[in-house]
Amino acid sequence: MSITPSASSAPGKVFLAGGYLVLDKNYSALVFALSARVHAVSAAAGKENTITIRSPQFSGAEWSYNITLPSPGSDSGVTVTATEGAKNAFIETTIRYVISYLSIPSDSVLPGAEITIYADNDYYSQPSPDVPRFNALNVPITSAHKTGLGSSAALTTALTACLLSTFSPIAASETTIHNLAQAAHCTAQGKVGSGFDVAAAVFGSCVYHRFSPPILEAVGDAGSAGFATRLRECVDSTWDFTIEKTSVPPGLRLLMGDVDCGSSTPGMVRKVLTWRKENAEEAKALWDGLEDLNKGLRDLLADARKRAEIEPEDVTLLLNIKSQLEKIRVGIRAMGEAAGVPIEPPAQTKLLDAATKATKGVLGGVVPGAGGYDAVVFLMADREKTVESLRRFLNKYQFEGEGEGKGTVEVLGTREEHEGVRQEDVGSYGV
Ligand SMILES: Nc1ncnc2c1ncn2[C@@H]1O[C@H](COP(=O)(O)OP(=O)(O)OP(=O)(O)O)[C@@H](O)[C@H]1O
Ligand SMILES: C[C@@](O)(CCOP(=O)(O)O)CC(=O)O
Image 1 (cartoon, rainbow, N blue to C red):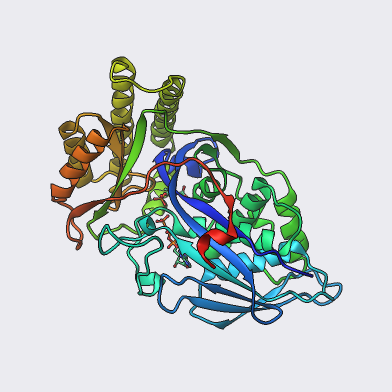
Image 2: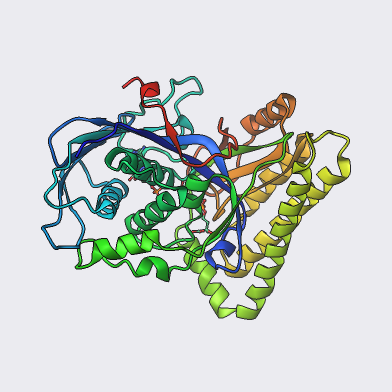
């Protein structure tokens, strides 16, 4: 058996509409892929049956795994034993799932491979705006301040694609990469979420309807009898998620702000779901209303995409998008208030309203995904002048949250870029 040195990358995400709703298959998410990507680059190196992963931007970020192929006749999948490095569940689980999926014959020897992970700078708060590409933060990965772009989903997806192309001569489809990465990601994070972040990492910007959780639950524990067969059957079966690829209309763009305010609220999802269960009727009205508004936003954006470029004269369309974003926020606030969860807390309302009012060309903003105090995303005219004036506004803004952070809003350099997972040129990383 030989290996093919390969490189793959997958994008981060920003969740514009459909947070919480998307956990239920009857509702959808509007999620955009970003220019910030995580890359996985492989080379033939090291001992047989060993896969070593390095993430050189972080200290102590080297993990070595001994791979034991299953004994003849066993279908429990490979055994992956960490021989070096602190636990990294996402890396370890991805290796176990991909190599088990490949069902390499037990009399083969797995050639040694080393894989280097590079994450674009926007995944983490940087000490200054002028840092080299893949800046080394020199702290353990768990202490880096994340900006919420979905690093684990992009990492799992890029690593899945890289392992598949390194160890298998057959090109994997996007669907295979998705199903396998989704299975590994859910196991590594210890829960089955909606999977929108892995979907965006694989398929890029999309309207996403989730898969049914029992699809994954059927795979069972890694290492149990029949695991490899069940995993292969699961990954190769037709899942019931749907993806409709989408994009931000020409002439518009997204801009993200990282709100450095400390307090994040654990258990928000659990609380919202509990409230929904206990208040089924009221929740249904709220959920249905929000889904209609989100669909309305998608329709307006589709309308805008039909134009070659949005011109300032397209006033009615722009005003409609603006008012749709505001209506969505009213629904989001109602959901948060009803469930007693700060999805769009007052400090975020103040920031979004002030930024939209102060900056001509900004159509509006929302708290992405689960919401809270971590981030904001704006939809705005794709003009340097508009970007500069929003940046100036945000740089001066003093956030009035309850957390321990500096109370500043850091503008991220990343923006929408709609492509999902892709093969890269191995030579382009200088390795
Ligand atoms: N560059 C990287 N190298 C190695 N492991 C990484 C890297 N980036 C992320 N990870 C893994 O992903 C974990 C972070 O996942 P977690 O789910 O906490 O955050 P996230 O996916 O970035 O969340 P969010 O959706 O809020 O952005 C890290 O602890 C590490 O295990
Ligand atoms: C609340 C939820 O719908 C979105 C979470 O988004 P984010 O991780 O805050 O970007 C959870 C999920 O979809 O798994």
